[in-house]
Amino acid sequence: MTAQPEPFRFDPLSAEFAADPYAVYARMRSQAGLFPFPELDMLLVTRQRDVAAIVADPRLPRMPAGILDEAELARRQRQDNFHDMPSHARFVQFSMLNSDGAVHDRLRRQVYRMFTPALVAGQRAAIEAYVTKLVSGLADAGEVDFVADLAVHVPGHVIGHLLGVPEADSPLLRTWSENIVQYFDVDRSAARKGLAESTAAEFGAYLRELKADRLRAPKDDLVTRLVEAEQSGEMSEDEFISTAMLILMAGHGSTIDVLGSGLHALLRFPDQLARLKADPRLMPTAVQEMFRFESPLPFFDRYAAEDVEIGGIAYPRGTRFGLLYGAANRDPERFENPDDFDVGRTPNRHLAFGGGAHFCLGNHLARLDMDVIFTTLFRTFRSIELIEAPDYKRSLSVRGPRALRLRLEAA
Ligand code: HEM
Image 1 (cartoon, rainbow, N blue to C red):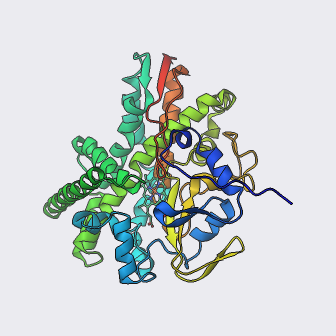
Image 2: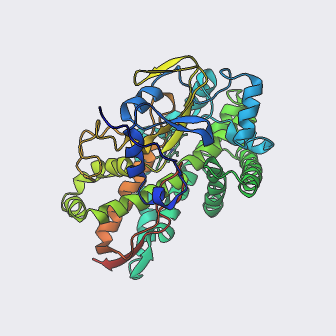
Image 3: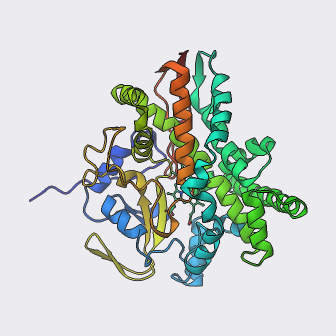
């Protein structure tokens, strides 16, 4: 008889989990069936084949509307502490990401053309110019925090530029994104709730003003395109705001986090850093591997719209599944030596950008940011040394180092 793994209490806010979530995910994966997580009323899915099957299955939408009855929806809203948040409900709880079917298709149609590989590649020169300026500012610094001194400045600038947000407002966008994203984690305290709600209201008012600006003077940017879509009846004003907000937020903290964890991985695997420096043509596969190795948005959820079978076990309609993309991306059944960081790994079809109808729209942009930053960094500095092992954030829904202290030596 094979021994059954010991059940254990899953604490995603613990120091142990922040230090090594992959050991915890491996324990969950080793048990039969899915891992119950009563705190969020869901079953956690850790195996790659189960996660991949769920995201591709239209019977498992993002949202519970139409699946659970009104009373149950209200109960869960309270349980998640998402009630009594009028601006948050209008602009964050509802969005392209948080919708399904025809509404989702209509909203996604308005913007997907702005994120094609060709259009994104057109941003390269502008990103290079900005990153070169930032990196040159560090050339004499000696010791830096890669996260605070470099990574935090790039994604907001790039996304803001694409949308058409004034450059001076980039720091504001970062703070707003953080205030809103933090409330999707496990800690739903009153203080965090208040901050998420007031930020959604403030951010909404800001976008309404930006809209008024573009109505007066249209520009060649994504906000103008969204305003045109709203004016022609393709989307409501609330949808305009929630879509712009989502695009400004979705890739902000996540790109900062994976820049930090990606560089940390290279420094922990010096043979891989040497290999990449010797052959910069490996940059695209190295970046792809960084997303697999430390997926910065490791957790999303889905609901069963009908009775379903996952991994041979039946689950009833209404079941909520917590998809652990970060766990799936370390599944040994799918990836050979999953805990090795390999800058040339191919194939490498990971789930860090999700899959199916909600597959990340910004993935090319995030890859481009990473490519430009690491290329510029390795060109500018002969040596990059880690001063101390970083602490990772305590979280279920985001993964990244709080800081990454480095000693740099210019080339
Ligand atoms: C580190 C970078 C990024 C990661 C890891 C990431 C990850 C993801 C994931 C996992 C999803 C799907 C969520 C689900 O399964 O329910 C998603 C959706 C989305 N992402 Fe990203 N993302 C990143 C960067 C970006 C950027 C830079 C943008 C925009 C500029 C962006 C825009 C979006 C949008 C709009 C969606 C919703 C798509 C839909 O619902 O149809 N992301 N992202």
